[in-house]
Each structure stands twice: as structure tokens, then as C-alpha cells.
Length: 219
Length: 305
Ligand SMILES: Nc1ncnc2c1ncn2[C@@H]1O[C@H](COP(=O)(O)OP(=O)(O)OP(=O)(O)O)[C@@H](O)[C@H]1O
Ligand SMILES: [Mg+2]
Image 1 (spheres, rainbow over the protein chains, first blue to last red):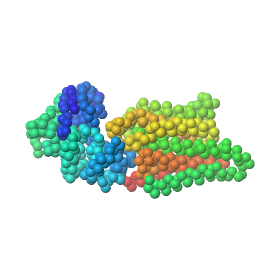
Image 2: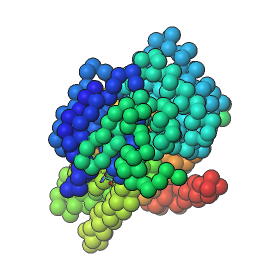
Image 3: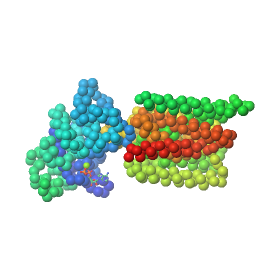
Image 4: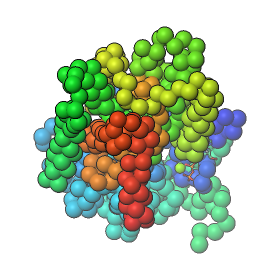
């Protein structure tokens, strides 16, 4: 999936321009960038949920799902009811895998709870399950680690690796450099004028981290 | 459904039947022309009460769901007051057409909805804007109604003068509403999700929301033409049932409707018979009856906090 010369603005306020890049299939790509640099905006555009001011996005027959960095539920809804939405068009054989994902994210005992009565981390796990259970082949996850404790950050990492081996493609945004180094093949640094992309080991070096994330030392 | 839910539904339903029968036959033996009274006065009034309960309850669920604002109903954003104002205007300008007041009310409710959709609904993710803007509109309509009706001595807020023509129009409007409902109700639960998610599910949310809001505005406008505005009734009924049953939007609808009908029946029974033969305004009685329910709701919320 490729995109060229994307430009984003809210009203008269420009967020970024001339953003060009490619999401490589069956890999994990991580977007890094300071708050407000436009990571969410870029993901919304790639998911066709927001129109770019200018530019082109080429999506080849792949279904795509975007998980926002925060999701609200507006009425009474149990975890089970939410997750059932995802198997509307699923075959029997998928249901087993379905239950595995629910179990891994520690949701089996929470299935009958109202989503709004769960803690922040529990809610995030519910939404991660919702994302993993989508039929889409490309998943865009916006800050998936938010609210997760150490244990579930690890669970999430393992699920990422496993789903990738099943042929899925991931684009995730993170603020955790070490997690990015561990989980992704490609890293993008988002700046207002350009997208700096490359293989993780080549691009995730001290100099780039200091420069693009606007910090003066790593500690 | 759990047993507790079944039980409460059964109780509310029985309550409705009891009140309906009571309204038909209470103090009827003292009347010489009792058949005429039942057929010409009590029966149309009773049927209209059922429609009123349906309209108040359903419209609240639909508006709260489609706007993703649980604490909101058609009275709070001016739809009911708009219908009431239109009826007041008609009373002053062309009183002869008042026999079609239910239809006029429905049209007024819908026009009001369209006005809201072209203005403050555009900012529906700004809660305060929606609630304060809606309330301003409601109060503005209310003030105009007061000014208009001050000299004419118009008092149309009792269900005592419901005619068979009113009932016929309400039935027709309800029928149209049912057709819209059948096409769109299966999407109702998805309004618990954020817009980003319904979009990704491929649901044409704008179209579904419009249809569901049209049902709400048409029904509420129609019954308000006769009953007058009952502020907060819908939101109290909807929220009380939500807190009590813990059911999602669609599953809650029958409960909300039956509870709302029960409230209207109770209010009109009180309005009709407590100082018999003097009538009290039904909408005011309904508001008074719902005050304890509102307090209960507040108490449950405070416990949750
Ligand atoms: N709905 C909106 N209306 C106006 N401006 C917006 C809107 N959403 C985002 N912005 C602005 O666009 C810029 C980019 O926002 P975006 O949410 O894409 O950043 P981000 O990189 O995802 O930040 P974070 O790390 O905090 O999630 C910010 O400056 C923000 O103020
Ligand atoms: Mg963001």
C-alpha cells in the first residue's frame, strides 16, 4: 500500500505536507513522532476515514481496519456484544481462533461486563481484541500500548508477532522506542515537511531519535 | 432476558392493562348514556394515551442514541415546544384547521428536527453546545407560545378532548413510523459505538440516523399537539430503564415504551379522576409523577460516583 505527497490540514492549520511512503506487506511498521505531529491524522487518511487536502493513496484490494487511540462506548454494551459484531461474517472454524484471542487478552471472565464499567487497561484490551478479530488484513493501531500493564504489553507483542506470521500487516503508532525496536521491521519518523522511513536497524539510531523526537538525550 | 427483567416487564404490562380497564369503567355507572361516553370519549382518549406513551419513550431512545447523548430527549432540544408553538399559532390564525392538530404537530416536529439538523446537530460532539443550544430553542418556542396563548385563553394540555380524528391521524403516523422502524431498527445498537467504528462497519450512519430521528420527531410532534410539552419525561424514562435493566439500546426499547405508557396512563388517570369531574392538565401531572423517578435516578447516579 502506497501513498504520495499527502497533505493534511484542519481548517487553515496545516499539520503536514509532502508525506510519501509505503506500508510493506506482512510486516510491522511503527510511526514515531512527538504529540501533535500528525500520527493519528496520517492513519485516519490511510484508512480512508479522512480526506487528504492533496495527494494519493493506493490500496490494492486489501481490507483495512483502524483502531483509534481512544474509543468511547455511548450506551450499555457488554464485551461479548461488542466482540460479536466482528463475527458477523465469520466461518465456524474461525470461532476457535476467536476464543484464543479473547483468552490471551484476559477477557474470558469479563465477557458479560458492561464496557464502561471496566478499567482503562481492560477497555484497551477489549478494543485490541476487537481489532484483532476484524477480518481486515491490514491493521492500523493508534497507540495500542495505552493503559496496558507490563504483562499485557508482552501479550500484545506476542500477538503482533503471531498475527504477522499469519500474513497480517501492521502499522502502529508508539511513544516507546524500545518496543518499536523490538516489534517492527520498519520505522517512520513523522515531521511536518516529510516522512523519514527505513528499516528499523538502519533508521532507529541515536541521532535520528534525538533529532526527530525533539529530545536532547535518551535518558 | 433474566427473570428479574421478565418480571418487571410483566408487572408494568399488567399495570397498563389494569389502568386501561379502570379508565374505561370507573364511575361509569352513574352516567345514563354510558355507552356513548365510553365510545366517544373514554376509548379514543385511552388509545391516544397509548400512542403518547409510545411517542415519549421511543423518541427519547432514538434521539439519545443517534446523537450519542444519553441525557437528552425531544423536549430538551425544542422539538416538542416547536410543535406546541405551531398549534398555538394555528389556534390564533386558522382555528378551523385545528381538527388536524395531530398531523400539524407531526409536521411541525419534523420541521423542527430539520432546523436542528441544519444547525446545532452539526456540533453534536460538543455536548454543551447541543444541550444548551437545544434548550435555548425550546425556551424560545415556549416563550412565544406563552405570548400567543395569553390572550386567547387557550388551554389544550389535557387529553380530555381527544377525538377519533386525532386517534386516526396518530394511528396513521404511527404506521408510517413502524415502516421506517422496520428498515432501520437493526442498526440501532451500533450507535453505542463511536462514529469511526460504524463507518468502518460500512453503515450509512447519516441515512439511518435521519430515518430514526424522523420517527422520533414525527411521533413526538404529533402527541405534543394535544398533550403539550412534558420536559424531561423521555430522558427520565429512558435512563431509569437503562439503569434498572442494564440492557443495550435495542433490547431496552420495549421496556422504555411500556414504562412510558404506564406513566402516561397513570398521569391521565390521576388527571381525569382525582377531582372528578374537574380535569387536571395531564402534562403537568405527568411531570409531577416523574419527579420521584428523577430523584431515584439521581440517587443511583450518585451511588455510582
Ligand atoms: N479535529 C481536529 N480539529 C482541529 N485540529 C486538530 C484536530 N485533530 C487534530 N488536530 C491538530 O492536528 C495536529 C495533529 O494531530 P494528531 O492527533 O494527528 O497528532 P498525533 O501525532 O496523533 O498526536 P498524539 O501523539 O498526541 O496522539 C495537532 O496539532 C492537533 O492539534
Ligand atoms: Mg494520536
